[in-house]
Amino acid sequence: MQTSRRAFLASAAATAVALRGAKLLTAQTSAEASITVLADEPIATIAPEVQGHFIEQLGGVVYDGVWVGKNSKIPNVTGIRKDFIDTLRAVNAPVLRWPGGCFADSYDWRDGIGPKRPQRTAFWKQEDANQYGTHEFMHTCRAIGCEPYLAADLRSLPARDFYQWVEYCNAPAGIGNDLAAQRSANGDKEPFNVKYWGVGNESWGCGGDQTPEEYAGEYRRFANWLPTYPQVQTSLVACGPNGDDIDWSRRLAAGLRGHLPWGLSTHYYTSGDPAKFAAGEAIDFTLPQFYDLLARASIMDRVITDAWSAFGENDKNHHTKLVIDEWGAWYGDSTRLAPKYNLSQQITLRDALHSGITFDIFHRHADKIGMANVAQSINCLHSLMLAQDDKFVRTPVFHVFRLYMAHQGGTSLRTEVVAPSIQNTIAQTSPVGGASTVGSTAAQKTLSGLSASASRKGNTLTLSVTNPHHDRPLTTTISFPGLGMRSASAEVLTHTDIHAHNTFAEPNNVTRKPATVAAIANSTLTHTFPAASITTISFSIA
Image 1 (cartoon, rainbow, N blue to C red):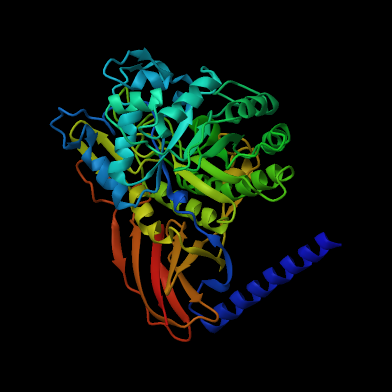
Image 2: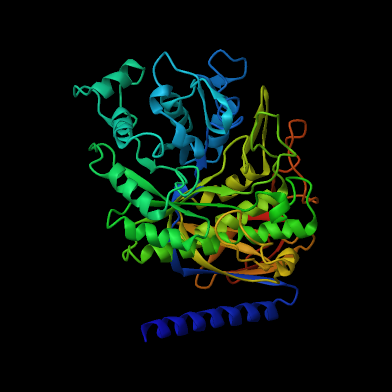
């Protein structure tokens, strides 16, 4: 009976919103869409960590991207590329994840401390001289002003090594602790106070090819009696599903037997093998491939709700939050910066639209998500930056992070959209055309004609809107029932070519620009969102 009542109320609410949108469109005959921000229906606070970042010892990410060395002619801060620091500071980066990714589960943290560091053949058969280790990563986080998030090796090291890494990082100085003394001898007397710890990575794959039950046993062993210190609260992240793998989430939660982590890691990429998933290459893609990628980005909504529901069967009070610590678009190697820059790719306006759609989904689920980390920050997949030697450029994805930065720490508000939908023709004709590279194989056959999310901080309301139509501006009526709106300002990211991107030679080809906003009347205004655009409007509440 309770379920039926909930379903009835949800249906009634949806009908009311649809009628309200229809009335708005009728009242504003020039409008093709409507957005209603319901200030009296808060969802939850948007964790700043939702706009988190990720770097891995892979290709040109760390070496050349982040670490150039203290003696480099490239501007640096104790060996860390200054442009990398400045860019993450510019987006108020809240958290940075390292050392992996798959690299984490073959990494011995002791190789990266002290004056003598061995050279190893690391993940992806690349040589690693371990110049960049724990101290260098902590100095990176300090320079940015963000929290560190460490991924521990569960596949190839015993639990004792995890315990001792926590001890090395967090044991206070001056208590006679040998690992704290080692840390001090290596240059950092005071503890690093690392809060976030991933217990392994992708344990269903490169992290050990384990079953949920096998990993649950390992998690319990690694997490049990972990050293704790009063100055920092340790938050553990368990390895969750590969995309929309409901079975993994359900069986893992049962296998943990009440040893619930703070976070459940979930990975979801929206491309991969171009031949299999029809996404095209980073720049060379067709219009159907353009829409297919964006439609598959919206599958993130299903990934989140399914993981939350399945894990919640054994976590009734939802103690555990979701951590989407790898997300983004993944193409082939046609735009790789150089042969050794594995998984580097060019970033176009399409990837910016993908980011806007993804952030809106995160905001709609602010009650479920404790952190998310784009994969990766520089020189890999869905990057904010590309760098090679002394050349550097910020990508369109960087500008999306700037546009959404104002949402950090705001209260997410229910936002309803009425807009013409877009057909995903690839998914219409292929049963796997709209599939993710991981998890779910269910096609996403349509794409919402507008994506939007809103948040409030004090007397400021921020609305972000993505128009994914490649050639169709959408005149939209925006309303705020119950709120008196005083003024508004806006920025927009767009281009006439959906393949547009920034290069070392043309770093500002795709960039943010101010947008004009019409006068507000009776808490309503009409705004035209350009084709293929991401817009953020900041409203002052009377």
